[in-house]
Length: 134
Image (tube, rainbow, N blue to C red):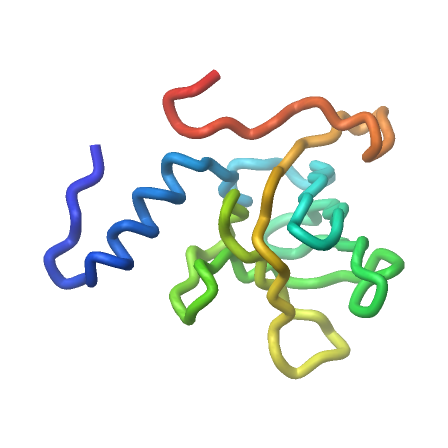
């Protein structure tokens, strides 16, 4: 059970609890070559994990229409607080693109799916559940 941190604001503590309820995935828990489909409010991204925070990502018509190697910083709640190397529902994915000086921040993440390697991203089945859910 989460205990609010006394040195954090109520808003930050609320966001932490919400990320635990809505669920997501820690990149460290997934092996390299894992394929994730990340549906945001505006785009569907495909990320092929390369290890650590590195991934090949595609799905945005301007920033990554074709797979490009990026460093996934993590997810934010729309401000400056970053949950490192985490992709969470209800949050914004943040990644560093080699051709841009500032990080790319997506619209709010609606769904995250792991794609079996033998299937195409359109046939992804495995959803990441919230802690305590199956």
